[in-house]
Amino acid sequence: MKKRFKLFVTLTIATISIGKANALNIAENDTTTIATNDTIYEEADISPEFPGGEQALMKHLQDSLKYPKDSIIQDMSIRLLISFVINKKGGTCNINILKHVNPEFDAMAVKVISSMPKWKPAYVNGVPVNYRYTIPVTICIRR
Image (tube, rainbow, N blue to C red; front, side, top):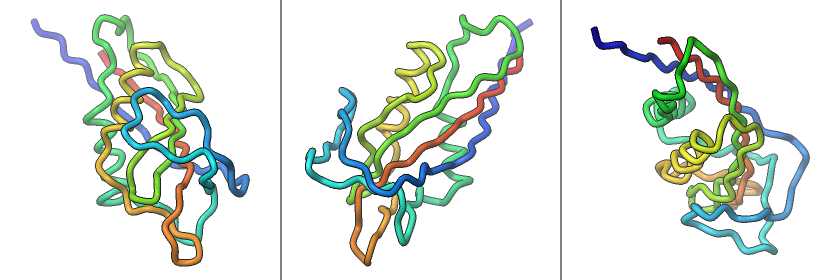
């Protein structure tokens, strides 16, 4: 009998409200870079938006994040905290895993975030800005 594994992703979107921050180290997998003197905001007049909204973001992550099958021993729930920048053009960069799961899954999460479709960027005073976004993702795996 073939066993099927079910992966459920619960997504809560949170942004850390500290004001603005300067650019951080750029991850190797980033396809877009931000100049080190460019400002990254954590508050904006208009927040960035994933194409299709929050539900579409949840679906994208659920469809894209695949936990390694050989690592599944029992039903489990894990939490991953990912921070990244949505740049002025809507691309993702400066991806950081703030709460790690394991190196293989962390690398996959970075790949999924870096390959996201373009977002609608954040705006401050009517101008598109770089915006730090933090996503806690809870993954429930059922054997």
